Image (tube, rainbow, N blue to C red):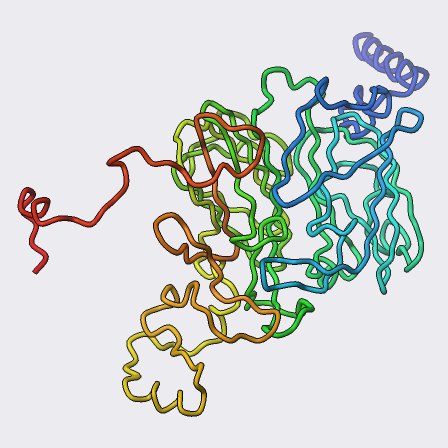
Length: 439
């Protein structure tokens, strides 16, 4: 063998032996990614605190889950049980809830917080809790049969893990999800950055979207429905039961929107503003990838977080742009009466049914606010009186109220419009001035 070949073989052998006797490589040395929660487990952080580490979110019509500190760990307790819940005046449902709240209370934390969450089951069926979007050890993921046994009625289970990342997430059962989520067992999780600095918004809202099928005259949601949902809610309330989103001119506003509806995606549209989608339940969106929108599509099982500067005072509608999602039970299961001439028929029917009222000859807006006999525990196109007439809205609808000066989150009432700034009936001189003919 030529000397040069012997030299090459010797060098390779020495290098191979060096590798064999050296210390085993670490995950970083091999290029393998570290599991998301590993670094958080190595670095022990003090429990995040309001003021020092974050400003709390506001939950319209909802609550935030209280906690206590034990050995440097935040301890929470969720109890799943049947409750009665008012969706809107005139509609009370028998549903299931965490801690008596529909949706469940927001779990609010700071990244790096270690938690122990106790879950007590007072339902008539087994359950679990899945921490939707949270990156954690598999044994804490809450999937019946796959990662844990079911929590039987009367049992209490313990979940113990660290939240390694900030963001907006959700929680819900993973036992008979079709039934238990449809019955109202859902909730939001907000994890703040540990060093938020100047990035904290002045207004930070948490909203959970939900859809229900509640047959008029009944009080238990029909959990087998797949298409025709007739009650749509934001934080468990249908308009006008939804509390407004209140902001002051100059505020940076963040709205966190979670969707655990059964089947529907929801395009949430905000009047008067353009915003940017800055975050999903998968994490923050780089600024270079953000663009302005006035409507954000929130898919089933997803979170979208939007931000904008409150610089346009007024009362601004915020609603799902699925048109049937802005109405209640009276918009479903009715014959199409648009354009039908019922002259003479109405009088004859009233001889038998004195309170009879023809439905929707020119659409459903004409029915809003009308008093009529309904099945018990049912709501029509409920709406509410506004300062210019009746607001014929319902369902997945709320109002953003932006004012020069506000205190807290209390409803400031209707907007006081500057003189001459409200649309009005056109007068003859207007038409003549601009050459408009209405013939």
